[in-house]
Length: 264
Image 1: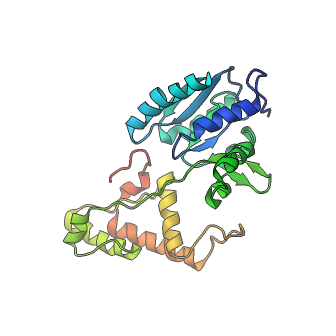
Image 2: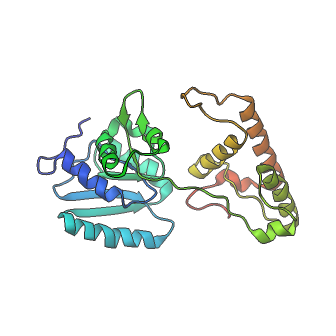
Image 3: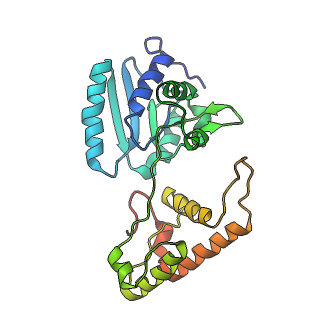
């Protein structure tokens, strides 16, 4: 699939413009479709509806307009629900048309064949800001094809939130995962308030389970990239999650959605 752009808007010029706008999209992972044939001086961006609506208002109505005027470029931003990002990306690939910048919560490698190599963006950023952290590199680089299938401009921690009054009431603090299980059971029994950690096929669950796996010494692969998921540590992590669900959760965790959690 071609990654060429109209002569009036060269690939290098497009990457330069795309990179400049992407740096303002905090918390995003950028994939630049290889089929994008945007009209000259037009940049089309798709990203999810931000959890803080004021961000979308600032970015869409203020930042991109000011940037566009400065760079003589018309910037069009479309927002969708975060759970629709995958289906929207697939639809644009099927149609062979869509946005120049597609912002994901995480950079999916499944679209590698349909996006440009983002190496030039990384090289430009490295010259200006220094080398990217290892997480950004490994999240967007395919060592087999030697291609950067996305650009990771940042990462966001996903902390555990809890009500201190409920934990104080049972005389505990969620300092360890086992504390979460034991204290969560007490809180659920006393206050009918369950532990809310997703156990569904979505991003929040992915992050939570990987965190639990790491606490038990489990991982999908080792530092050399060799699969090591099938391990005693993984089985221990699974046993813990099963106990946590049975003792402190409800069935709602199986329908958890990152955009609109069943409960908080």
